[in-house]
Image (cartoon, rainbow, N blue to C red; front, side, top):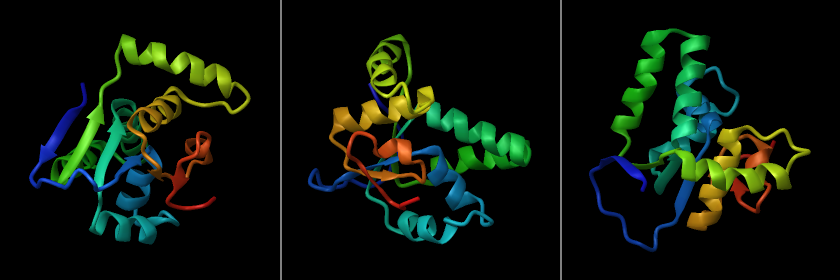
Length: 147
């Protein structure tokens, strides 16, 4: 079951979802990132957003290592400020779903977070991926940026 971090507005069911990868959070929150302006525009009027608990952990770790505890905690505060985001948890059942994806793309050096994102997009039929990582397009999703 997915967890809603915050839900302050009801969106029509017809509005498409977008999957957020770690690179989207980094690009938006790190003004020195070369894709910052693209993600600043995207986050200004986002559709319903979906991400993985693994992406949250990965992004938190990135801000902690790159900057400090304050920036890592600020990232978590940013999540709370989003109008709506669904975080899909990662447990043993989710882990079992990743193995076929990791096997199918064993030549791609996918992380577990990448594989979880691919599974989430496939299950939810998400076609838009906010990422700069080409791996997230392996199953047909369109990346917000082309790298």
